[in-house]
Image (cartoon, rainbow, N blue to C red):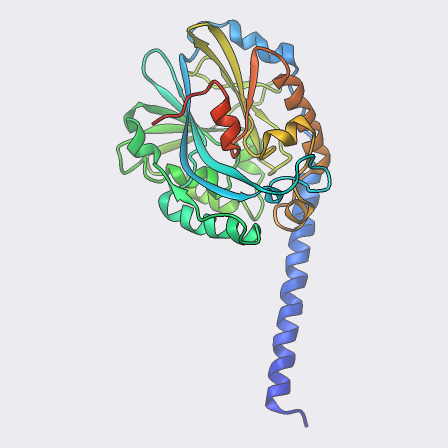
Length: 324
């Protein structure tokens, strides 16, 4: 007769196997979902039409809610990376668009102070502890007048893009959150939390944008700002296009979220590490390849600048100033 210890060990082993099978099945379902999404992308000509309208935003800034030095191999596939090894500075920004009347639109919220601690530890672990602890800098609520925020959009619903919005309600903000139908309806296990957080925002109303013939969907009340459903990274990933009227004329910015995490990924068409996009965050590799090529073609066009969410050095090298 088997001893009690043997029976317990067998039950534990069975539980581990069952959990592993459930996890693998969830990954399979998630992968199938995102691999089936290939939304159309706007052409350069379609994008630039919006730059000719009146009432464009007059300024764009990025606000670094937190930053962290991590291993480069955490962001780029080491097999294809022309400069493997070493560390890079990763940031968690919000982008702030301002119109002449003072109203603002926020693209992504970055990290909250509490979430930064948890997220930073995860990044260190995934980097093999080659990176440094995360540094939290500032929140949206403390860096600008929350009552000036009239609209919010999210490139996707992962926690490092959503939790930074949490303080806005307590600070007196009242705004509309704009989503494509794709982002509103298409979720996976990594975006359910972000969707729940949006639903709990008592100071925000969620508005689903009407589908249009063009891949570009304009956001009423915010001239010069458009959103494009792109999938690839998450089922509901969106890219924002903003035409900004500056002192030297109109400049067009494409806020691309996590379609790529480093500018070299776009420049040299390098995907993320296989362990990441197959076992941690299932991605549509074919769509991301298409998106990186599209972003490079746009970035090579003089009036357009592509901004990625997590590459601090690239943001600092851009002509978009940091919001202090």
